[in-house]
Length: 107
Length: 121
Image (cartoon, rainbow over all chains, first blue to last red; front, top):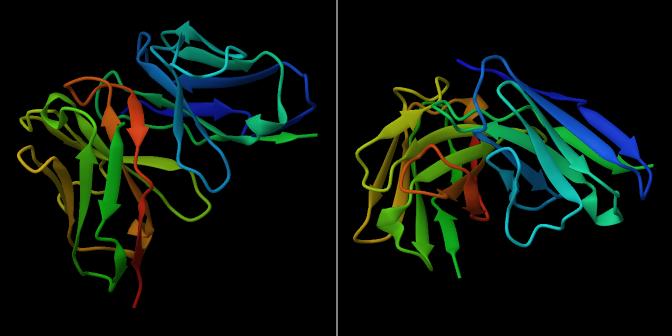
């Protein structure tokens, strides 16, 4: 099975910073990758799919890139409401594995 | 408005069984794949099982294969997860989620609020 590895596991940044989270697949998955945000105590929310397509209603400061095995989620200017855990998920073929998550905090 | 409402969670002894339900509304249920995802207390998301819109394709994580069964009743707009031979490590909040297409291999664009399953003696 393909493994999904996110880095870093946790991250602390200042408001206004550019933040990048990476997700690496152990084998190529073309662009079948989604990113989710889960705020504390809340339900996960889809941010990006097909590696770089922004889900409707998601602020434009979020962006995704990558193809094959290496992917990134970027927040161009960190806001206080972005405190959350972020997860990548592959969906090219089952099992549709999630990464282990990245916990983002404000410094 | 898409709504997904899970039910059926609770406390069960190791080795026991439980059936979760997910009542869907606000979209044409039979046209979309559906998924179960779980989250153990304080841990990350774990994909559990998925089913295509027509119900002809099902998929399972290795951790639940042979113990859990996903099914759906498109006439009732409801997704199910039958969980047998439950273990302590199955303790988690279980979310149902709608995929973005008729197949299971798609992003999860709507999520329910989750139902808590606790496996304990």
